[in-house]
Length: 441
Picture 1: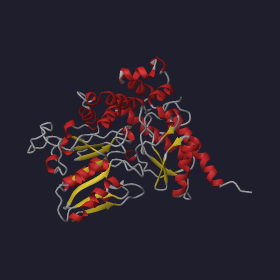
Picture 2: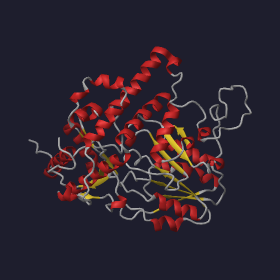
Picture 3: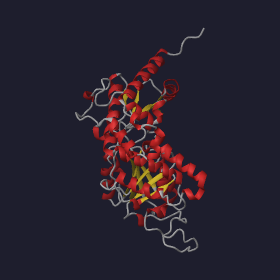
Picture 4: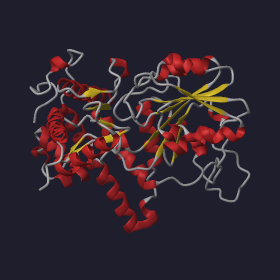
């Protein structure tokens, strides 16, 4: 297998930086080195994992069957994640409550996710999904008629409906327009006024791959005393985001996609100074200071963000995401980001060279791990969806169709060979589409 640094198919001269991204093998070896010995025993003689291909097939089983470039839709569970979840489920099957005694995945996940986004673990709450996180915010803040929320046109609905639901309270939702798939800061600034209570934007836009400057957006919000919420699900796990340095008030993410853990578990960061402003709209037995003091109903709320969780969390989902976060941590966030951005830029380069129209913003600060494109003005929604379906069923290449575009989203374990395979299959599909259906007799 070739590597990003030496591939003759996607040369380093096509990149914007002379610095080569980190080679893949050391990242995969670090994952092996940090893995549970019982998991490694399932792999057999780990000395045989001495090539990139062997390591990828062992750690990422999806590579055995597919060229998988669809992490913006669903992240396939790596082998360590699948193993940890299976072991936990088997333990529940054999021992019931005994399997859970002394095992606190909540603590582990709070610690690991806190390190990923550079916040205190006590500031993290678990929810059902990103929508649930935003609804927790929407239901918790004290809204008044005439307040407004600023978001963007093209946001994923998880970051829209919770705000639209507030219309019955007299709260307005304002949508900043996009320009060539970009979200200009001046468009957001133009909508913010003295009655703006919240600005809520995605870290990475799902439909275009635009990476927003969330720190600058937070500054715009804070300048008028508003709060800033960010949907991080299309970036976290592939790209680094320091929620403390960016001065975010809320950061919502989820277990699927780039974190490569089974859906559906939400992760909600709340800035500690903001937590007292958030009403606990769904107080439950796990919201209080001493939850196992079952009959003291007048207890105060927990001091940390766990007060927002209400009831018991999804134990198996927490085990799974704990394993996923441990794997990503072992590989290294900086190395993962460097490789993933280099792969996405390689996708742009080879597609552009072959005449495909790149629709994702292309300035270095705007790039993410998502690349959207079409093969010409004549491509429509139905054709994009048909091509994506055909690539998966006939060529075992998995990407997405979104909004009439095709969307490629590689992760750090992908390779230049994967990109070359994608390009070859796309060229075949384009040639077939331009030829049209074979004539019938």
